[in-house]
Length: 130
Image (cartoon, rainbow, N blue to C red; front, side, top):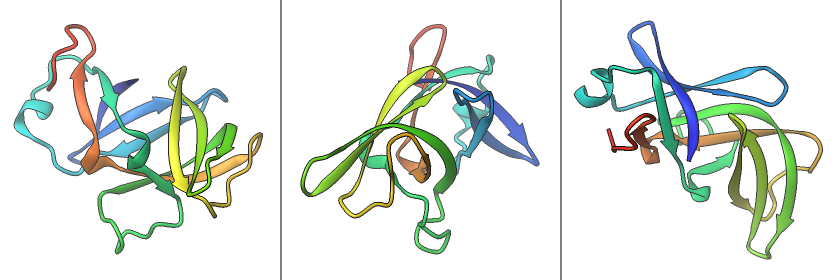
């Protein structure tokens, strides 16, 4: 679970996350339900499973709900069929599960995508699902 801010830009909602280097990433939320749009607080918690992440080489045509971002990779762990990459998003350690051949190195910047159609949103104050 990742702390995030709900932001709007050009009529679209985004989940904004802070990176350890002071930069931010804006992940476009594809399906904007009325409940999410009506959220009274901009502080949310974003739920993403490791398999929702992928290589940043995913094109919009391959997955229109994929948001791309570049982030420092803290740790990688090859597991055979997968490569686990640990990132820090909004001060929270996040595990991503990538294909074994992903070009991701610990200690370097990595190019990632996340399927935002798989995201679950929670109110940060109450913990209730939005």
